Length: 407
Image 1 (cartoon, rainbow, N blue to C red):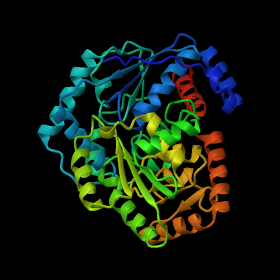
Image 2 (image 1 turned 180 degrees about the horizontal axis):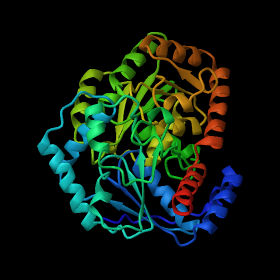
Image 3 (image 1 turned 90 degrees about the vertical axis):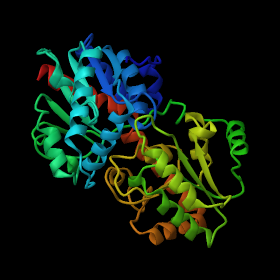
């Protein structure tokens, strides 16, 4: 399935990162007309889809012929790829021969269905990783973009999956800590980005913020701690509730749990119900999901209404939600895992703590020191502006594409 895309203009981003826009324009001239296709599992839900919704239109504006294709697959395929995702992050789960056969069959079918006639095809994550091996396109160059924390994978699964992935010219990982054979010689460190002009990150009026607060019963007189995360065992949302309960002993606060139910994550519904039960009937724990009409505008507003962000994931490929919160001039308190560690500078624009009590203590300290809270928030936004905006990410893509096509 080909995804329809909005029109975006690089010039609109110059206000944030003029130098990056100029570099992208230069690279775009060298690659003008090059056909590039991105392939992933879903057009909705999760950070990868959001990234592509910005990066591909900007690639077009830079002069490339860029498109986005999405897998067509039955629900049972996504049950298998969720297992695959979890094992690549270290889970000790068995994937049966029948499940591997389904995985390979769906990839083979999509190799025939999808419009992949291009000079460069960028495959995102494990779901479509085998699509290239079923295509007879010798002139096409393939790049694998991994958005997962593969620092400690289940090696049995990792070895089986990657044994057939020799076709790729480059492999892109958030951090070099995630790289292991057979990709060690073709790996590139490649952090993702946020779009400052997307509905999730653009500026909002005070009236719009108040309207969202009223609609979702957010008390503007109480500090708001916000968690934005999928209902996934790796996100450990129950620990976020534990942190909130400890903070609540000292401060009259609210906890917003913001999420969307991704199409390619059938397991999410189970964990959603588990977290609901764990939260109980506390009226200050707000579940704000797409089931209640929470879209990108609402997430933006909720983050802007927040006092600070909280992230309790035990594994995290990167965690764009952290950069999103930092962009709104709020520090984030989080566990030091995966890509979280390179976004938050401990004690500068947020705090990195592992233990629930320690997380709660630094939150309490911030709530008691408004000047520190504001100063950390300003430093948080500047870190994102210089490092994690779409223009920096697009420049990285064009550099990699240029190296693959032109050496």
